[in-house]
Length: 295
Image (cartoon, rainbow, N blue to C red):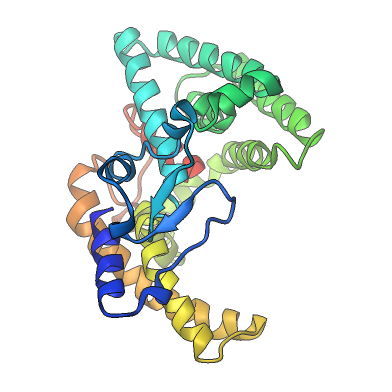
């Protein structure tokens, strides 16, 4: 957030505001330069609460330019808070944790299927987003703790959730993606060790390890680059694929590498898949197992 604020302020100060100007794709809030935000709004952006707090106080969220993905980070922040509270309440006994997560999932499902209730929890995980996190928790449980009966129950539950989401795809597309991805992870886990030992897709493992950093830096980096190339005449579909995309990746990947090395790596507690084989997700790797779904 600090990097996005500094870059946007610098761009506006140099007269290049058009390279940072954003318009919310979903219409949920405005994208504005730092100077246009109040102290409360800046704090809301910094704490990732700007999206869900407005629903309680009757105003539209206003985002800092360069943080167009803040809405999803807000949901992820809530996931960490809820799972942290569940771990504390369960005293780190995983059976109790999974039972608590199942209760939260059931509550979310009830609210998500009720338009009246859903309208009251806008911006909170309860409006539906927890169901996506639940898919990731289900994968973790299937891999680390479930017996044969439990694994079949997990897979049946994911399939049932997918079937329900398919009855209203326009409203539940994110749940469809989450359940399909979860089922794919379960189906493909037999190949985990072989792929981890393989050297052929080493760059994919390298990017996978840094996918969260890629996610964090891509918006601020890609926004001005795409505008510059667009004004330079790269406006066709093929121009976007063959010029804009490679140029953006050529800048974003090194930026993510630096960000990962300086800010993310100190907090990691598991081996980099690109540096050697790994046999199993660590028992304390819940967040690592679920993070790809949240992103």
